[in-house]
Image (tube, rainbow, N blue to C red; front, side, top):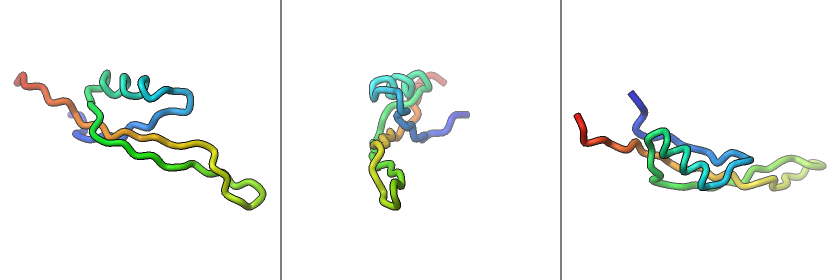
Length: 65
């Protein structure tokens, strides 16, 4: 049985639309979004590399039983 809630991360070479399409193919719909910066240490200082975007997917319930 599939989990009711799954977090999907937009991959580095993936668009937001492609991530949402991937969620839908897996049977999930977006129910939330969060972003967090990804840092890399350069010369002892944190430097932002890119923004991580994650979507909270909830299982699409089927009425068929």
